[in-house]
Image 1 (cartoon, rainbow, N blue to C red):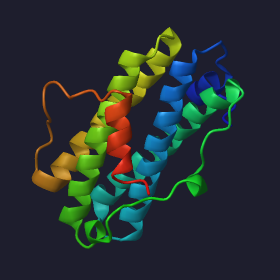
Image 2 (image 1 turned 45 degrees about the horizontal axis):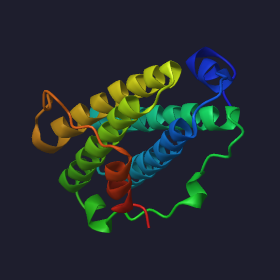
Image 3 (image 1 turned 180 degrees about the vertical axis):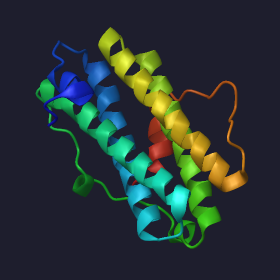
Length: 178
């Protein structure tokens, strides 16, 4: 777990979180593991070069930090977060056959990730968790904008992204987790 900086503060954050708040954190761990799987596969497919590849590498780095932050919250609450090997991913192979297809899937996923984080901000009661989840949602919005630019040359998205409550976020994840 992280020892300094923002991640260190998140990992060391203590408090008694409601079961409902921890359920949101567990859901967000699944989001981050799916995001890491997507960016890893997109990079392994070697479809992107130059600035586009740098963008994907940075997004992967961000997602790994998000995972560590949310996992740190769960560990701090005495829970064991899911890890990559705990989940099976149902990312369609055809999505990595072309740059356009990969960017399209990435934009679709990031839309769901952003909505899930916005839903979590709305659902949790703890102020610290609200702030942490909102900050990560801002990062997910940047990823979405970047992927929209790669996919459809639309760098600015919608004015009011939809939030996904826990049942809707679970249905979204079920599309890509086996």
